[in-house]
Length: 161
Image (cartoon, rainbow, N blue to C red; front, side, top):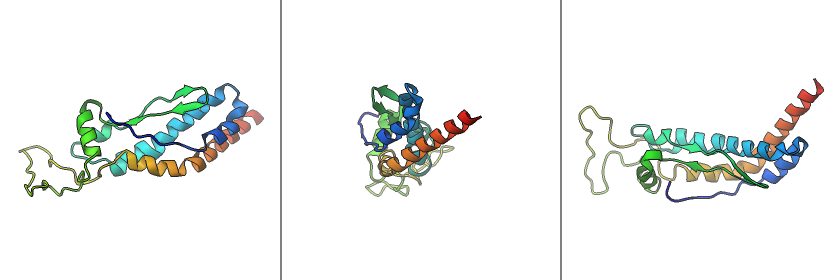
């Protein structure tokens, strides 16, 4: 999308300490965890609960990027829009998204074209990426620590075999 919103995920440093046993692969493990976190806690809720849906095209474009690792800094970008970038941004910033009930602000009813789907969304709403990102940020520390502990337990079980 044309504009950006950034959240700070906390707990990654503590999770990285848990993964330190992996040596040089620890940073890559942490990056994969961050990508999984974005997919699970931002992308999935954005698609299922927050994105307005008329045809499904917008929802299908919501995705998390491949993690970028720079030393001990990790980033994943969650985006939407693809070829419909202008529409995605417009809907994201419109408080009426998914709530119009088929009526314009001036009171004019939206009528579907013959054979076309209803021309307005009856689900979702605005800030369909930002809201799940904010919620995810509140839970990031607990999730990342639990995830890194689970990875370490899995590795330890494999080493005992």
